[in-house]
Image 1 (cartoon, one colour):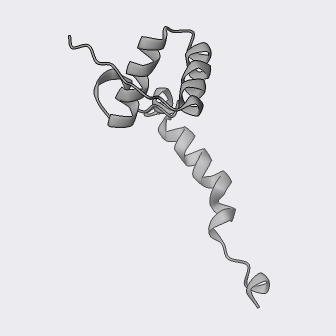
Image 2 (cartoon, one colour; image 1 turned 135 degrees about the vertical axis):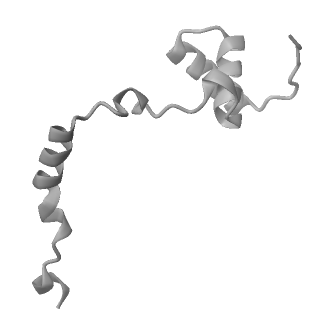
Length: 82
């Protein structure tokens, strides 16, 4: 693996990185690698909005129920648009 050095990091960026390090509970190095992976779309650190674990979990019945319950949002109230 290659090592890199980043110089002249602005204070606000360093502070944000330190805050993210604490939030993740990881080392500064691992936090920086994770953020670089996310922003560049490389490897396991790709951006995750937290919804991936839900993908593909609905049954046909769940979909039918959802579509029935949200059908009202498809109708336009003409009175509101006069």
